[in-house]
Image (cartoon, rainbow, N blue to C red; front, side):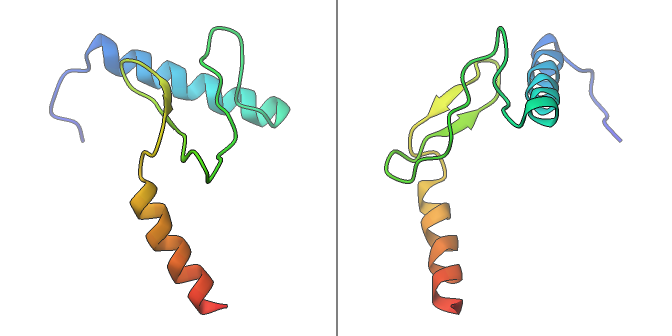
Length: 77
């Protein structure tokens, strides 16, 4: 259980994520009116959608983590 009061930014993040999920469920694409474009993951750029007080594609976010996980999966094949 949360022991802190939600701030306006918390509600904004909740709404943004909810809007992305609803769009994805309805259309198979999270993008929608008033939302920053959520591009497909591209390994060469490593762009990941960061959702926070400002939602945007973030280059290389978690790049090292994805490379580590990919190494595990590739090595198991």
